[in-house]
Amino acid sequence: MRFINSYSRLPESFFERIAPEPVAAPSLIRLNRALAARLELDLPDDDAELAEIFTGNRLLPGSEPIAQAYAGHQFGQFVPQLGDGRAHLLGEVQNAAGERFDIQLKGSGRTRFSRGGDGRAPLGPVIREYVVSEAMHALGVPTSRALAMAATGQPVFREDELPGAVITRVASGFVRVGTFEYFAARRMEDELRTLADHVIERNHPAAREADNPYLALFESVCAAQAGLMAQWLCLGFVHGVMNTDNTAVSGETIDYGPCAFLDHYDPAMVFSSIDHMGRYAFNQQPTIMAWNLACLGGCLLPLLDPDEASARAAGEAILERFIPDFTDQYRRGLCRKIGLPADDESFSLARRLLDLMRRSRADFTNAFRALCDAQAAPAPFTALFATAEEIATWLNDWLARLDSTGSAGAARETMRAANPAFIPRNHRIEAAIQAAETGDFAPVEQLIEVLRRPFDDQPEHAEFADPPRPEERVTRTFCGT
Image (cartoon, rainbow, N blue to C red; front, side, top):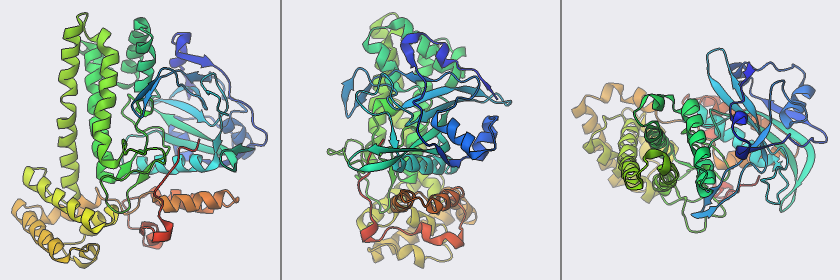
């Protein structure tokens, strides 16, 4: 492993050089050893030394900690300066395979971007981000990943006094739409160009070969986000706060705050405690992403063409393809979930199923998983629906469609690869957090291990697939950090 730190070689206007604030009594909660091996990190074996590293008390040789500057639209309102108010980018590493990763501490203390905050994170949100981001990776979704969790030994004061912790996150880059907005709002065109060149080099290298690299960059970012939105919707994932400062131009899912997975299927479901108008509801996510990408396109206008009208026309032509591109990928994913080829008739059949799920409040994940075995054993699937006659009609139509398309033989395996048995259920995460806050991390460890194999049956852990009982339902989640 070696540090490259290409971001900290950019102009000083891009960041603040600042070390993490030391903590009083660091202790290691968990190290993701498989990820550490992929990064080829040269780490000590001693947990006490690891705790020093993953709270920021001790820096790895070659790291150059910085806090990144960015702006952002938060719930549609532009905020010209945000930035890493509780995070420190330790640096960028490259392994022997040529893969490059940014390593960042979150909850590691104040920076000049803290806006009056304490720069710290409670244990609960750290656990939530670790569990959900690693589950998303196991589900095959582009995402930041969790390298480590460490306790600080210091309290964090929110509504109550809570134990503090730091999460170490890894991504192919933490540049956001809001990073471009930061420089565009200040009319810093040279910095915009420098940032775009950096992102092309790090995340979208094919754009270098295009006649217009910056137009190709915008096109590549839009394509990546279309695929990401399709995956989110096919898995029932709700990000919760899709502000432009939470939208990575790498195409990865980042900033797991009030995120959640659907239990019963409700396309208008909102989990964030501060999303009172449903802006970031489950079914609004592709539309919001198109809005965020329009913000990015506006920032890139000076780079796309010297003539503003030509630049705007070129950017709009790309943006107009976003929803059709998302729809095509979503159709493919949804049809795969019911084991059928991606054509209009199959897509219509899949959407009929979603409507029946909505009306019956059927569990999203369990309904699709039960469908995998419904050719041989339909009862567990149909039992999830209140509309008995209608689901029986749908099932007959589905079986007939399997036969007519020649898909029946391969359908089960196709569906099992697309429909997980296990997701990070809200109530399971909350129960694990509550146990951890008393010092018992066994439920966290067990949950992480189950979610490492989401497509396996794991009968010994069948209870982790159960939806919440009424008293266990979690309908509001919080940013928390």
